[in-house]
Image (tube, rainbow, N blue to C red; front, side):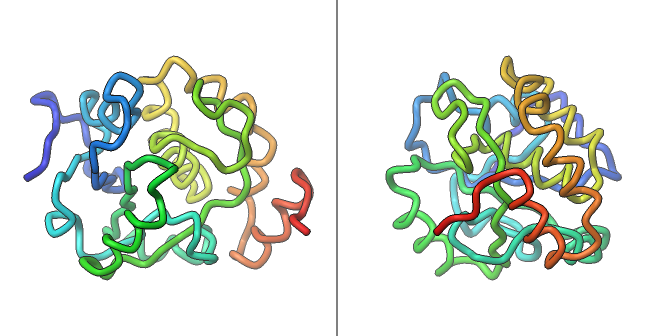
Length: 188
């Protein structure tokens, strides 16, 4: 089962975006629900209904989403996000990995603009994570459409403009991995 507004606005050239929604957060603050309401993503309550090919945004995967993934995306690969509480992330990801063959991808460092985690590196909302992925993959218009339905969407782009542009200019994932440390401190 998937939930989407009756006015589906997905363009045939858009990257398919899917959310496995676990109902662990406040529905009023949920960016995934807002994206679905505006026709930008499909919500799934069941992991078995998620796409079979593509990428799962997973902050613990260790493999960056980047230029090396463009070929798979251009062939119709989806980007899937797990919408859950940051406090229950590990257990939720473990459950998802048992039911799907999606390839895990991490995003390079960016700052959150959402009101819950504002300014925290890597603590992005689902919509911020999708928009970042799309921007990095050269799908800037789709990224901007997603962010336009959020009150903090423009702030996210403004806050991360320089790193996002540099990330989208990277030619390989290896280059992307190094570029992020031009903007943020490398972890010790």
